[in-house]
Image 1 (cartoon, rainbow, N blue to C red):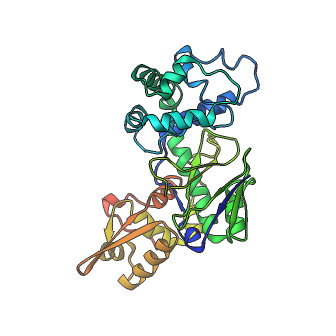
Image 2 (spheres, one colour):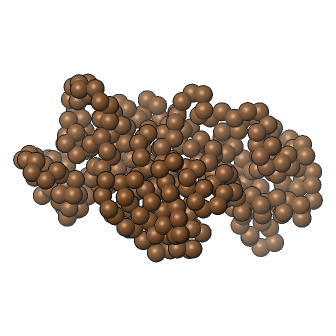
Image 3 (cartoon, rainbow, N blue to C red):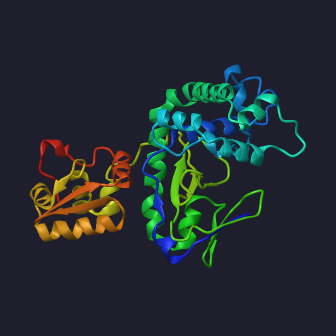
Length: 326
């Protein structure tokens, strides 16, 4: 069992991830494939990804250097290639089963061998190209839906129910969040909080990562489904029913950044009323506001943008400055 000891400050800084991590998706997609009990599952995989197979198992416990949590895949590949030798060695030692013979090329990789680094990077690129790129838009939609479908509920529930709403395997009690795990591990974020990241490619237990490059970043990965019936679709009018018609109109008007005066004109309401609505949207994590002199500029957060993406057609295109119905 993995236990995360959360202070009040940690709980106050729980937030959803702003972007998916394509290399994480790549590794989890491979691990998901390997979870299949079919005896020929290895033979069905392309030979060019062979170097990944000894490191990525069906339990998603591969080395952390394979899946840097960055939004740009090319940046991620560069980080993988630049992994320090000490990290290569420690991570490979962590994941390698006791008593299992270590191949020469893996020993060379642990020593930082340039040829072996290139071998792993090419295999990772090949798998990303084959498995992730063809369905990139679908996976991005799954990521957004994985936030939008849970965010409002998460913020409305008490702490224990909020975590349980992400996955039935998550349990919170008396300051401790527990996650199913084969080992006994205790983690204390010490005020850094938790970043919640949905994965549309993983269907196993929730995963928890602390990237070696940023030990103050603690990421909880929870599975979501990316079936055609759920990703990117909402019943018509769902946003208005959720937020109320005026507040939904204000949110829709922020498909591009607006000042308080712009929002008042578009929504046909007073500036003080706009301020009340944007304050509520800020409290829900949907909007951020910045004051410059006497003007306040409002814009969507990634969560707000995700909510709008999964609720198409809620308002006229605000780029045309059409009037927004109250």
